[in-house]
Image (tube, rainbow, N blue to C red; front, side, top):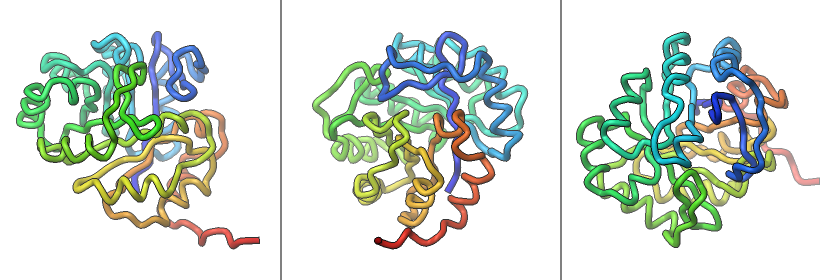
Length: 249
């Protein structure tokens, strides 16, 4: 399973939000490239970069930060946030993204989704951001009535093969994933997915690895790394060779 250290960018800084709340922001590094370099120097082989300004405003606002990160570090970068037109997708690839992550537009504009998939295939990821079992859009600021499972099935019928599944309630809270929820998602996904939300300990990573879901290909970690609860090297080891589950007392 792949570890994706998260670099969430707002106002040119590396930040983390609690449960997607823009009013609950913690600034972890004034320079996103510095944060990204720390993870790569620690052994990370992939990066997950999100333009929070773009996600909320509907157009990329931090492509120059993506270009700095991709230009300075020799690792693949997946990038999302405000990619709602073919021009913005092209701009993200031109700035150095290896893969792009679509959100709102993937649900609201079927023609756009079809065109991006036709042009870029498996280099396109769609983010399914879930609160209370239903999908949220517009940088998690708008709640829909769309059930996550129905959305995943719809996206797969349109040709989407890679997903990010984010648990908004757990994001930034460090309380761990809902393993039953992850297993249910794995039953629905016919391609590959990356999990995001609530990772706070090495045991949380090990528990995901012990699920042994072949379509669960990675996990995104943010706050726990910034707060030095574990290192990148320790996280990679936990995902690669998870210890047995703790026994019941």
